Image (cartoon, rainbow, N blue to C red):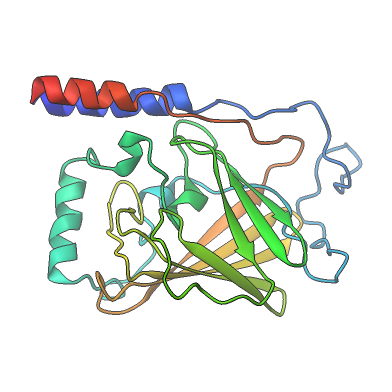
Length: 265
């Protein structure tokens, strides 16, 4: 019992010390943002357009922590069908209150969890959009990191090196940016409180749709035959954070976690 309490406390320490309570440039108005007569951001203004005519997804975005904890929270019974080993592992992780979470060891949250990362405060993502490349910059409680989404027509590598965040290629489907990601290392968790597993065979599809100036949806499909009987989906809403920006975040307690764990063991 002492070990479990200690490990849980260390995880909280990682969150508290590694997560800033506010971002940078708080008093600098974001250029080009539509505003109401009282100076507030007009979140219901029309979706902005990029120079190439595509919807411009650029900006700093944030979701709530409900999907970070349980990506499948909106699914109906039977829509999430895990293989027996995955179901047992998920129950074990949830029963241990995600103490085995790779984020405890300062590892990246993985895809798609990294989009929703929160911990005692906002951990937003920033989208930087160009015609051939979309860059996703993350402020997480594990460490600042990034993803590159290539829109230059390339295909997935034939012999990928498995990684935490995989390989991402994108394409436009009307006004929606479709991002396909594969090449995972199989150590990622899909979400935090539930601990749904992900394997190396996972294929994650994210559909980014900016509904208006201040609101965006990411429609996520997880196709992972190594852990699930069939693909499953989640629709996660995001809202724009204007007049602010990301701040660097680093997790510095991983060594303390390992040291204390080994002593108690």
